[in-house]
Image 1 (cartoon, rainbow, N blue to C red):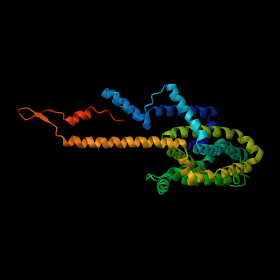
Image 2: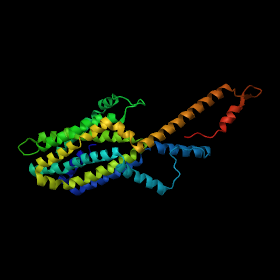
Image 3: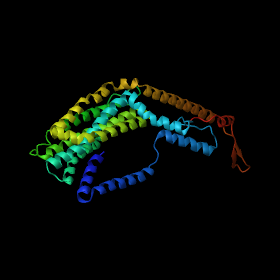
Image 4: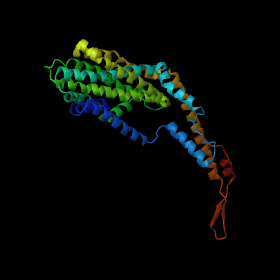
Length: 365
């Protein structure tokens, strides 16, 4: 969460005291280390775990009747085509994805515009060094940490919402946190816009604006992502992938216009323009907080997902009932024990129920 904070600070000091090349080398080193650690992480994706379990049982039992509901008998190119195209299809067809991709993309892009605005304000206008101006990002980092440290009371606030018909807290409960963050972001942006310059204003005032700005961004990124995950279930990875593409594109494109924007309008009015843009999109989380349940009900993809989950739940309950009946029947039929002349058990015989159970087709894993 605090990568956008530590990055400028580390990069600023390395650029000033070592070389800008070493800032790039450090990214490469950390990337290699992260990739190495990634290889050591165990798989946690439920469909993949079930597929592995079914394959392991087939091999151990030498029985091809064990299978998982996620086993797909299609060619690898077809599987890749479906999985790689689904995020883009959802990004243009699903209303939830359309609005949240646009909202988070704009928020993300304006966050990265700070990489342009802060050096202009603190280095060019206030005359700070590169390393000193990088410390201005600490305010954003403090705001992020506030959200992270408040995870426990935030969870209690989310759990306090009225449960749905299944007795679970609906995904819209997370929108309450996003709504708070959505208000904090433009307030902080306008605060920074009119306190950053002129240089006669104490810099601590504009740096302090980063606290609600960082808290708002942290709340939006964490809990809006959770909303997408809880809304789309098994398709959550596709929803998050489409969101990552959109926000990365905007996060990379908007800063390209940053210098021209601040040179043309000045730091005060450029920040005001960005703040007003964030004000315009504030209603999006409030609409989803109020009408998100209805929007999800009208989603064809979510309806399809629910039908699949309900069908699998019915199969699971039916299998549990069958297993319970067989268990009770086996307890009622005595097992024949064969004893030798010394009274020592020589073996266990198989009752009729045992033979029937052993020849039954295997249940779904």
